[in-house]
Length: 373
Image (cartoon, rainbow, N blue to C red; front, side):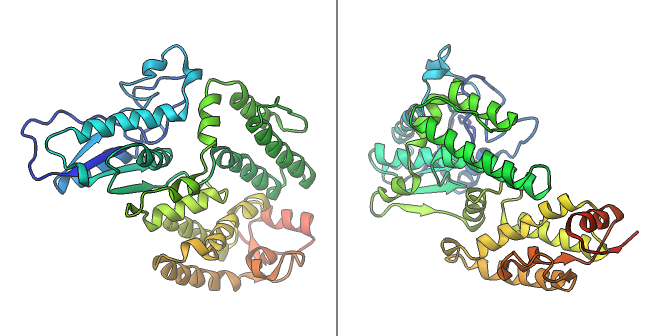
C-alpha cells in the first residue's frame, strides 16, 4: 500500500522509502522477504515498488511501509499473539502512515492519494473513511471486491468443478463437497463448530486452518466488510482509478478463476488451445475439459454488464470471435445435447486428437474421433 502527494519542492535528503507487501503474510509467520508485493521464491512482481516509482518520476512524494506480518515490521505489537491481529489493525496502521505523510512539509494535504493492491486496495478504501483531510483520490489495483470468505470459497468450488470435469470425482461428490464448503463458510461466520462431513481431506485441512488457526480473527474481521457498501460510503468527489486489466482480473477471480485472470493471458490460453486442436488435441479428455474453461471465463466476462463500460471490451470481443470461428470449424456439433446452445464450444467435440484423447472420448462419450500422430 502507498500514499502520495504532489509536491512543489523535492526533499534534498529524503529518507529511504518504507516498503510494503501486496498481500498480508500469514499472521503466524513473519516473513522479512515478503515486501513490495513479492512472495519469494515463487513470485517477485515488485508490484508496489513499481507502483511507487511511477508517481515518483512525476514529482510525487510517496510513502510505502511494511504491513504487519511482512518486512521489518514483522508482527510488531502483535509479536507472540498473532491470533489477536485483525483487519482494523491494518487500517489503523495505514492511517498512521497517512498522517505521517500528511505532516511532511513537502506534501500538499489537499492532494493526498492512496494506492493499494488486492487486499491493500480494500484497506485503502476503508482508510478513506477514517482520515482527514480525505484522500483526493484512490488507486485500486485488483481490489478485493467481495467479502473475504466468499472469495476464499471460490477456490475450493473452482477446484471441485475442475476435478469433476476431468472425471477425478463424480458429480455426486462435487455436490456434497460444494455443500460442505458453503456449510463451513456459514458456520465460521456464525461462530459455530466446523462440520467436516462429506468433505475431501484436502478441504477438511483447509477449513481446519481457517477455524482454528491464528488467522481466524483477521479473516472474520475482514469478512465483515462488504466492499461495494464501503465503496458507496466514499466522500463525494473522491476520484477513483480502476484500470481495465485490473477490473477484468478482479471480475475473473471473483467468478472463480484464478489462473490467467488478465484479458491478455486468458485470450492467449484460449488461442493456444485452439492452435493445439487444429493439429489434433494432444492430451486426455480431462485436460480437454479443463482447457475449455478458458472460454467459459471469457464468456462470463463478455456478458458481464459491469465490464461493458470499458472500450477495450470491443477489441477483446473481436479477438475472441476470430478464435471462435477457427474452433467452430473443428467441432463435431451436438455431442452433448444437454448443454445449452449458447455454450456451443462445450456442446460439441473437436474432431481429432492423440490416441489417448480419442480412446477417452470413445469410452466415455461413445463418439469416434480421428486419431492424429
